[in-house]
Length: 78
Image (cartoon, rainbow, N blue to C red; front, side, top):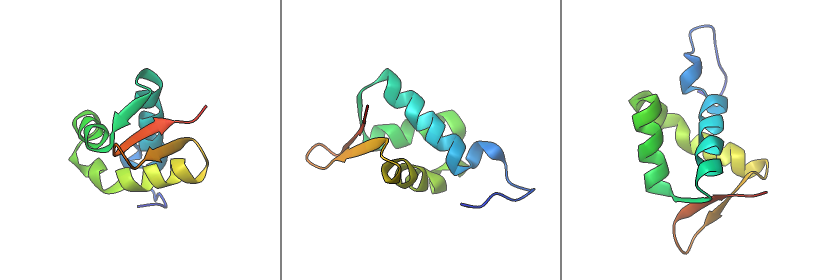
């Protein structure tokens, strides 16, 4: 669901989920991947599960986040 349609619920869109990820990372500088995914699913809903990875890929591509392989965590780039 990368391209929204008139039937798309906006809270499951990649842009909305990306904003939630940035909000979480602004409160916590580093967060484990599984913890972030679980937190987003609880906050947004189970339907968001499919787009979390797309949102992380989007944020990585525009240079907003970094993946720390040795600790399996996401961090915000300032």
